[in-house]
Length: 319
Image 1 (cartoon, one colour):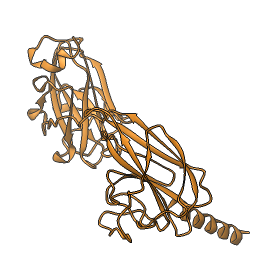
Image 2 (cartoon, one colour):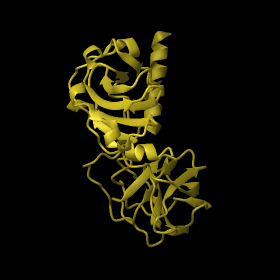
Image 3 (spheres, one colour):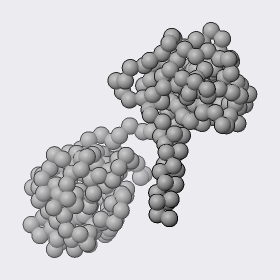
Image 4 (cartoon, helix red, strand yellow):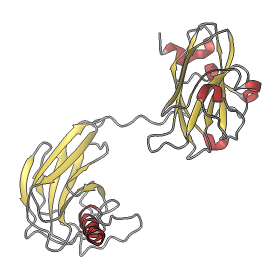
């Protein structure tokens, strides 16, 4: 029985690789084509269209698309010309989907021009571009193997999109509390820093529940008694490295003993507290073990309400 299970598992994995794990184009790989993409007979298609097509008898001059795509497309291809209209500032997320083509293996691409080296997005059944502007694009349905050709349905949609905001401006912190960077003087609601530029100085397990041995950076802020302060620290969306901690202390010589707020519970790590007394507080962005990929984003979630004019731009956001 164990032998049979192993054989069945091997067959299952092999079948899955044949469909789901087709080799993809890697940067630097040569684009092997028998000729240039032929757009002379491109079929016009518009955003929102649902059409039927057929690659049977289509041209077969392109074997690979770059810089994204599968490593070879040996079947015939059919080309569609998509004109996206709009103002100069408009941006769109274009999605193309093919269906009803089983059992053959067809793939779909969108190109920024009639060049197989200008592929923007691709997929087994669907693609979605990043935010792109108005213009002429080419949607290509291609067969993966020589005998992969046949009828299909194609739908194209164009949705308005807003590009992600640029990353916040960098604001390096201090290495120690003596070199802490004044948040009020900086006047930023959000900023970034690279944890790999620091070494380990502090730990506050009393607030975060975990001791830390990785690098940390320090910022300062003056609070009146009862004033609220909140901040969050997080790595970029592409991963959870570095493993961050965040805490606020009143005396860096005894960070663990004077910690008034801290977090090491997830992503992002956040503090939110009311100052128990007037004075300077130290916001410490810390790492549990190492700096990881370094990049860290900090946001000031609830600026203080004091009348210190140096709070500037941040304070004005809440008035």
